[in-house]
Length: 186
Image (cartoon, rainbow, N blue to C red; front, side, top):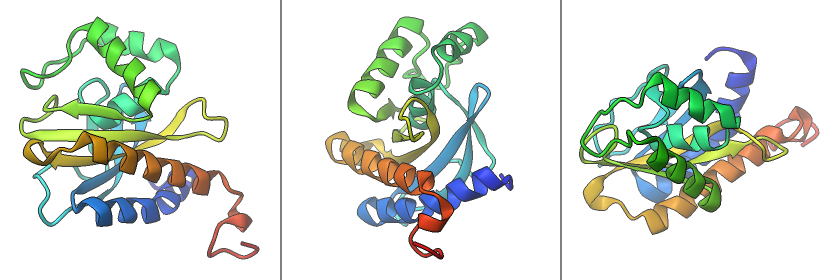
């Protein structure tokens, strides 16, 4: 997490995580892909937020979390096949363990620009996440998510909010350092 690229990503994303927190007052996360897992880089904990067991450095499965699906949907196509071959572990009765259902979820994520995981990793939670895309928009550099209690999940509201935060972070991160607001020359 202390690598220069990751530190720059955290710094670029932090204002957008804070904005997303202000809109939702829920747990907000930033993660990157590490092999077949998502690894958390940053988190803002909401005051009324669901108890989501995540800290910076924690690793979560790609197939069972909104964050993981956002990363997986915008990764090289072979990665999904690798994840399926490694086994789709069931964490709750709602976890996607069917390769076909996972394929459909990833296609839906690419279509709408955000992923959803409803009680797939932990009961009572909904994760809505969007990829922080590379400048060429071909792959995810990271993902931003909000995790809410399933009783408060309004995907029609959360999806666009998370997608907006991820888009802003991507634009900010892709700017040359001298062109970022708050730096010399910007």
